[in-house]
Image (cartoon, helix red, strand yellow):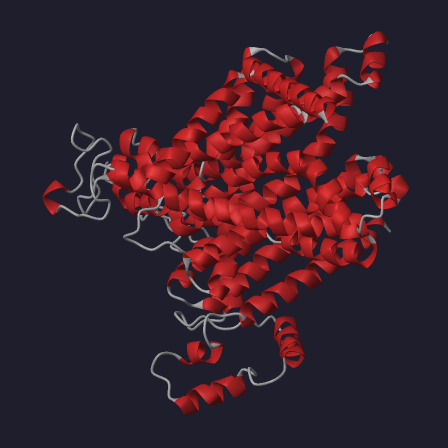
Length: 335
Length: 292
């Protein structure tokens, strides 16, 4: 029941996203038909394309047409590669997803313990460290952090491999199973490839994690402070419960709720930062695909990319909502 | 009249003392304000302060490291990076300030309308704002610039649009709380029109909170605009701009010429850091309860 209600709340967002993407496709600079016809087109060819693509019909009719194409999974064709946009996005999505998810795990894995430690000892050294990291972290331009990491760990230290994609030239991609190289190489039992893929992944994932760490650590600290200061914790303490139990069993479970809400915002940041990080590390994901298309003035891939990213974002927020319901029983009761 | 003036002075004095207290409590805020004034000076006088022409190339001097003659070194065309960084301040801050001003004005007015009127205005504006927030914001900015055309003006519009929801939501929440407050009722009783009430009673009351947000979003706007030019949108070479300069230096990083990307990146970071610190400091002054 709860799931159905949540799905219903995501519906207006999906409708809004589709309308906005449709409007963006109609707002192409100049005449879209001239653009799609290419530079050497005659007047006749342009008129024909305008008719073919339906630009001579009214806006609502065009919108219905757009919906029909979407329903068939047709996001148009890339002019530079001649491939359907949807297929290209689908083949590149695992690379982006692997990068984003590893970065998310890394940043949650660092931010949450850091925030808890800072909240347990306010005013201590680790609290100050937490404050500095959170303020500095949000000020770092991701593309710049990425370059700094490359300089330090690739050029100076020589620890990291060349920042050119998901695998170095000596490795071959593992057989396709999930599209995640880390998972696929483990499934194939190929530990050399696993190590190579991990080496390539580490720096870009760290770059994204540094960026998303700040809001997570900040909110963890604040919400843990609030939870630890509340009356049920005082009661638990007075009842003589072990400190471990109080902190992790009682305070953390309550303190995590705002952290999960913040994840929604963090995803918005990360999906955007993804584009920049992929460009810096020549990562063959959907972000760098969109950037290449943008530079070549190839708009269908860009629009497909924006739509896919927005739908992903809506879906992720839906998952967060559902997760929230799992952790906080009160939400279920209200629903 | 004299009593009112006196009360005004006393209140002003109290505010000053409160600001002095906050600055003494947190010297970082003072530092942020000092840094901010440096950036403003650079933005205003930058072109006359730069020691070299930011566009003049000198291939004999290409890719030399930092030295007494070229503090930040030179890039692959032999242009002085220090001069380029200084001159770029005006463009980078300009884009961010105009975008935030647009977002602030439009967002505040929409939020006030939604929060004060309620009803269908609230529903439509709320839905529009939610739709913007449904997109990953940087991705939406990319899409807008791609659709409207690749120009600096469109970077400004895109940045304004993605910052608008913050203001609209904040103004809506604050207006909603105050719509039936005593001073609003009193103003209505005196025969003021609704528009007049919103602009002369409601707006001044929520303005301090909104100003805090301005400082915080300025940092985000700078990051966003620099990110867009980093991927090749908006500002075009050879224009000096921090994001594009980092992009130009990206290929040099791998071959060890770190200064080409480092200095513009550091200055960009410092600018964002300064606005974020200032925002935190301003919030402490305006709204001590929200301090974290």
